[in-house]
Length: 60
Image 1 (tube, helix red, strand yellow):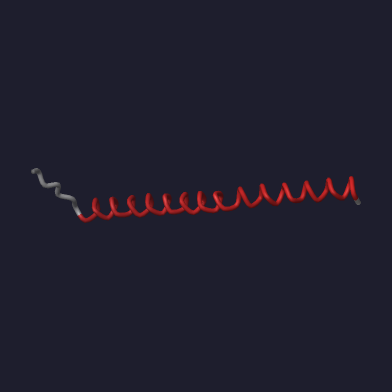
Image 2: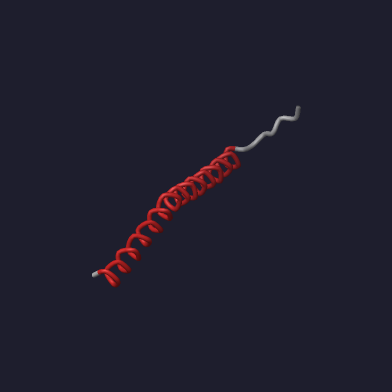
């Protein structure tokens, strides 16, 4: 198997690229997590608000 020799500068650049990619993936994961939680919550809140408005119009 062929060994790949990298200089310190090349290794540092590769490390920086890997850290940037990991940070990007973590940010996307956090955004997906918030969206997954927030979307159903907002839909339920909107439905409850609309129901309350209709009840108030017709019964209040």
